[in-house]
Image (cartoon, rainbow, N blue to C red; front, side, top):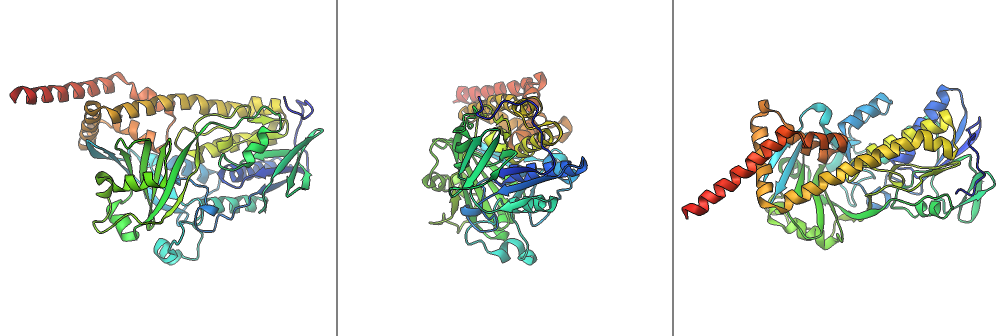
Length: 461
């Protein structure tokens, strides 16, 4: 139960003060939508984003530690909102996935323009990034996606203060926010857009409002410099997915960006040595130039990834959004930030800021993401089984290759994998397509065909 006075009729009045803790996509999206909507209905609000980072600097200190992949569907949604993403913010358009297993690989082409994706830098780029290599004639322009969004929020009227909020107290009917022991102001609404990699989220757990942050696992993001020419010729416009049974590694991918590639790894105990072992694997090393060797030092970070759902991510005058609330399993964190931020902003401006208001108008968005993640967990469990079972793995590759070679037969299996990797579609919809009887029958036929070929080979011997 919240320590705030129970009130089901709280609303933002003219002059209301909103404190947004965190200037990542969730915080910026909320600020943009809340300020736009307030103007449309003639309401005056005072909104401040508190973000201690500068997203313009190189390296992990200014980066939000993410692979930096944005779905084409989100790019289009943002364009409708007036948030236009284009180079150099968008580093590269991705139209292909290279699906690599120990049984071979297959190229998956985007089934349509609407299913494409793009890559971005969340901060100012890797440490020791060569601006001339990365942006050519655009060296003077920003490349940070997060800084671009903060600029959009500023244009809507948001204030941005580069300090860390280190304490929140609940006093009567309003939260008070503090920095370095000094009270800044009483807030009519506090928005937790701080993610789960910051200690800020833990402050909300100590408020007694019932909030518990989501369960997490660790990821390892690395930026490897290759030069523009090598990135283009070796990786092209494709993200390379590796399912190669490396111990403790659940998922690994290489994403091209400018003159760098981003190596993303997910697992139980991923370390720098895990990355070195991955890059030394012959299947991975084959993707790099012959003369290339793993550098002793490279830009890297170890972020936490949301794999659960927050408990009670709202209270009177408080709402948690983005990773601190609900996010899609393993994919499309920026898209989840967009959905939760917009739902929270609409609730706060149009309906109210009480626990009841957020439960009625905001929480359904969180529950929809959480329910969808159940089907996502099923799909990734199947992927793990495929990865560990040679006959099933070979059958899948055979089916995918046949679809890519004969597009007239349809891309049933290809679109299932494409949408799983990109996050363009809901896991629920992907799951329904994956259990299509015709697709399952085709898959089983491939399995029995491979078993028969193997049996025939053994018999002849």
